Image (cartoon, rainbow, N blue to C red; front, side, top):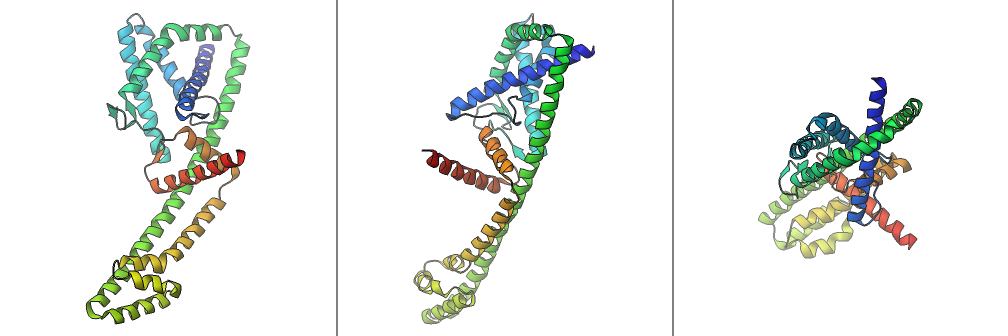
Length: 312
């Protein structure tokens, strides 16, 4: 019994590796660059291992009916993919893949196209691949099987710990960055409303010359007299312009300072992991920190572009 469980685990490992090969080739061709596809760092996608083993164990009794096998495997793999997407989103507040652009999708987590592909792959698995994999594993001695599963389990467990730890840290940094961006927007809007009310009150009671004097006073109060001529020429067209001229430089400086403080807490390894995950999951979306994630993507894209230019 224990040996059979060990062999099933070895099936899981082998199918995880084959799934990684399939996903990496597919994504590399689509993006025209090498992609280490998968949530973990190593060359394996556990969701494929779980899916393949689930199909083998749950559907081995329907192999005599290809149609039943096809549709049953669609249900099994679809439920697994949907649950995995939901679980990752709950754990890390992010959607790792998105099928909203595909027809007949369910909440963007699964779609008909993917279901049909997994149905076909399941047919290949049951009628051709698994007999070969099972025979390959059965050819190993018991000691060899135990050695391989021990090494694979240790490697995948360590990889999982490192990746989950980093992803939680990335989520924390995104939360801090999102808070900084929200504070910046809030302060800018609040200041704009205050200044707008002040200017509009002046417009109701002051002559143009008095209004210009009021604007001069406002500029000097905020410590930015260098912008006087520009503001004077633009005040008639948009009172909101005054908010940008008076405060945006100061608020941007404060935002940059907070971003630098957040970046200072990251390490070279965390930045590498950020790039790997975002390249592996280009459709990654954050349910809570969308603006921060987009800013991180833009920053990493700039770094990648500069690196490419240096290599050229």
